[in-house]
Length: 545
Image (cartoon, rainbow, N blue to C red; front, side):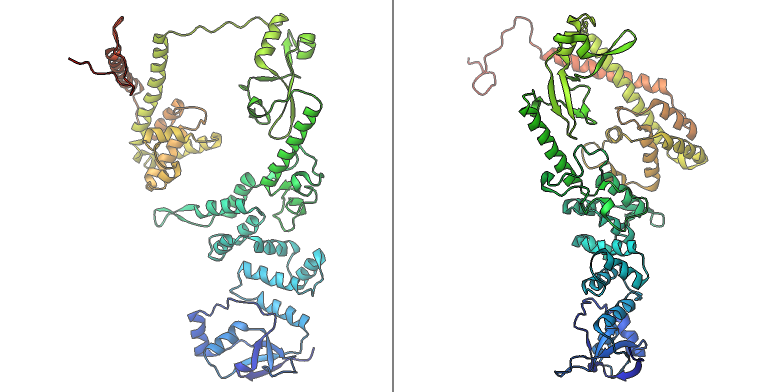
């Protein structure tokens, strides 16, 4: 390489390199105005044009395409260039170093620069090429791999990244989700993300933070392989390569965040197909052995990879308590053991099962247990009383919560500290919020999603709703938590008269029940009364005079 020479040349004496592929030069009005007023101040790096056998510009531009394009657009007379005699490989290396220093370099642009450098073959092939390139540009190998993965993003995700709707670190993580359907789901989640803007006093669209993206992907688009029912080394299962060799296994992916486990599948749909293929193979094997197999509608309902408690089946290899020890069913019943079936759970585990009723009958016949007493059917009056008490409890809680929400000013007044303390204590214990209870009380159940309604509330109303959510923190209950109601009322200094509210609710529900019973009695035909036959349309025919 010879010493560079600084020259001033006409822009037409320069041309782009044959492999130049930067389509968007971003010739903004501000940039053009600056060049027009001050000229090109930063020197372009060029080399003598090697095409000597045909008329061509004297120089090829290695770095400075944006400045040269602006000079051509503005018809400038001269531009400063630094001439160096460089080979193609040296020119590509110099161009890469110059481009990586651009102030307007986006994450996608950086990824394209790395990919162009690898495609040139100047650094060899395979993982060795990435290592050499990383050393050349002064970046870590994991950084290069993370950036290169951005090129696998779908076009909508690339646009979102370019528009600043996704952070670059989050986009690198999203790029590990390769399935098109999964990426489409992610786009929906990201597009709907909002955060509260204190200045505007409302929720506004905002990029989803990296940690939240990480949690979302871990929950929805990651599948741990440690409990896989099939052989991870099996090649060809569901027409897919083995998990050990799969490029979508985290252990085979470079540039993931520190601490990422190695045995995680980033293509859950592929994992499910493999589980299905494994399940089908197990069922075929059981049938070939002549065993009774439960499939389709006959198969039990499953919960956590086990037969659900109300599935109608029990584990044939299970045990029964006899005095102070557990004895296997097979040992207790011997030849009286009920018919044994085999079933494969959705996650590929083979279960040996018996019908629950048959097992109970066999245990009774073997005098291991006593026959179950049939529960006595409660009278209609008893049912009505029980239903009334349930409704009294539910609607009393509804009325008290309504009264409490009417005092939402107390939550932000002098009692705010006590309320927030109570809220923090609840946050420590809460798992889920039962949205259905809140939707029903507020009359939102008919239309829309819980969050759609929440987004329309003011800051004060949203704060009250958040507190209300912790009054319905039990996902298995169909009502508000009475203890929580009392705790929040005490913290906020709101007086609630439970006895009076319950009395009012009871009187209203009793009156409604009596009115319904009276209406039903009036429409019921008297004993022995004859009803007129119905015509073909199903309506009683009219009598003729």
